[in-house]
Length: 154
Image 1 (cartoon, rainbow, N blue to C red):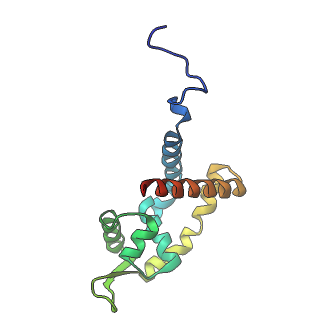
Image 2: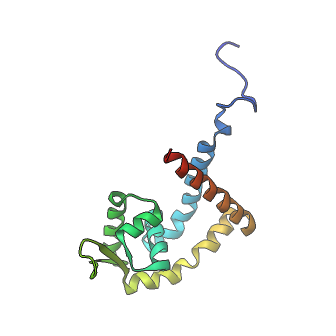
Image 3: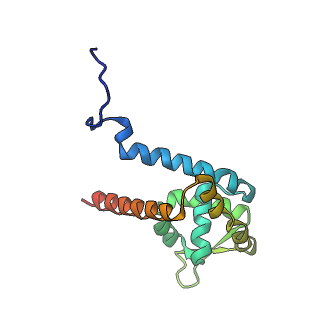
């Protein structure tokens, strides 16, 4: 048949063989699992990532948050503004360097951590995967991220 060919395992352009396709679908699917878990907390997935960083290391400068989350400050700023409006964080000028904004948790934001402790086990349960398999996946994805970052610098 002209114009149609069977997709074989040897076709380097077969959609289902593309790493970018698998990563894209996996990302959307996993974030979709988080959405209903985060809604009662009033958080989007990107806001949840900001809160995770702050629960682990607050206070942080906007620059440090940007580096940790691999987000440019222009993308991070609206997330921080929204988190501030809902009362989870506070942004203040750094006492040591007035040019820097220090991001800290409010009492309400710090207390939210207790509720967030329920999210990882719920995600694992909904995925139906073993923890060891998820750790291996995380390690593999971290290597992909590192390799892509090295490729960007070439």
